[in-house]
Length: 348
Image (cartoon, rainbow, N blue to C red; front, side):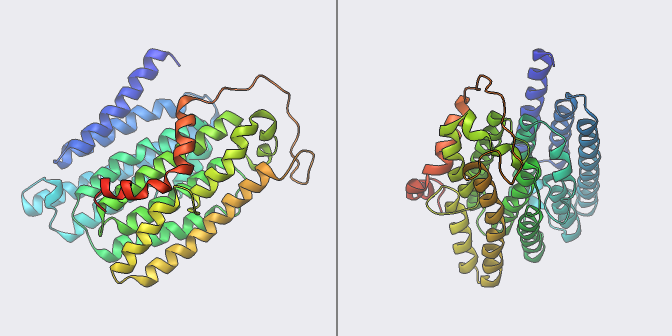
């Protein structure tokens, strides 16, 4: 793709997210979401492959459905109450409809079925944008909105954590595994959004850092399925040694950065007299941890030829890891000792 066109589309992504995040009017927020969708569609379809076109079509239809539902619900709210302000949603039905529309945009269970299929048809770079940047605008709206009902958010959050754990167990494609990982992490954020919005923001920031490191690592290794991980040691030994720690951080294991938001979320749920919710969320994290451990095993404890049918690759010149990967990987692994400073900064 022409670099000028790419720069224009990236500017459109930034503009759409900025408009949505800074708006207090539902029409302006809807316009920002639409700019965001229209900017990423050409980036998704730039690889002229049937899978990419199929993924782009699915994504466009899903986002159009969510945007139409959001617009309908906001117009209904304006008709009932006479105001368009995002923070002054008072009617339960339009508020619940907008929450479900944003859940569809984010890919939260049970409205998640499009996300693994779309992510599987994209390149790792576009998949990274879809899994990180595209989550910011809907979350900005969820953080501004008044809580529709405690039960709805907890049901969406728990369903997402369980589906994200169960769905990734039987996958061999790395992009689908990362899609289910994304669903599970978003579920954790939704569980706590009504009780501690600043904690949701902390969980979102750590998710962005960890997911960026994971996607860039796979891109550096040119790995798209579990079998191809077996040859990564020959291409980037130091990065291969750090990747299991990165994956365990995604799973929320001590002493990595990913443990911090899960620990604080479980603590807050217990304070809110929701021990059953906390226990179910903690158990669902074990499901996710299993497939992260499976990736660690494939990457570090197998060498081709082996029972995973990994084949040796030509020793081509290796890619030099990017600056973003060099920053994201240590941040994913080493930030837990700074948790008191982070908690003070976020007023937790």
